[in-house]
Image (cartoon, rainbow, N blue to C red):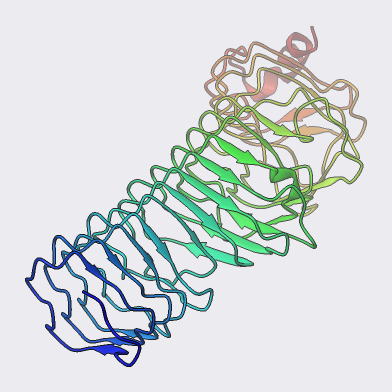
Length: 370
């Protein structure tokens, strides 16, 4: 059907349930609700000048693409357009659930709403400067960020997402979190991240093995909780250089059973000087050289793979604190400094260190120094 230039609006139910295939007319400015409802054979219509498109205007139509870059607001105009695979929107539109029940698998947005939901989406390219998503997108595997001015990314509960790509360079600082992204394995250009936002930003990223966070200098309690496969944070526990000391708080790597460090030396890490340091408790450490002592004490309870510990170079330690190596079930050898004169209760409970009585400390001490 051909519209003349004077025809700029299409009324409600105008073509509903018809067999119309195409509408030709370049001046369409408004389309009322249900105008093309169940037009299953509709293939083409020029919507480039449309400012208003009513609810369910194209529901169950045959449209495969739509350029609506002039609309002022987005409604459920394309609800159940399962053949719709491409849509172009103005940057000002924040999409929530309006494109639910379409066939769109890849799309580019600059803005999404708090209730964003597109179950068919597999790849999302985002051009804005701040991104937050919490509702699980069941098919979403990849998110690509292209804006060098992006400053905040919060991705939560994306159970199918495997890959995140940041721009090659960023103009400023970038904060990020990826909580409960259970299939996440790759974060490209993650070295550009300068801080972690949200409590437990990598918690339950159970598939993540390696990530470059060399731009981050501070980590907090349970940032990597239940990252079972995590082996390497580049610059942190590999052989790479990191000129700024890491500031660490709390049980940072709890249940990271594959995460290992080989030594703790003064200057590489900075801890809260008044609290017990349990940063590396419940990790996969196997052999450890502890080169200095924090006033709050170090604790390695639950390190089930820990076998040997060398503390012999420490000069300011006189007491092994309570629970220090509790449940280190593989621990067989600990080299203590000569300054140690006492061992508190349960320090070696459920380890392979010889069971001892307090009054027989000298015997135990000699054994541990071997």
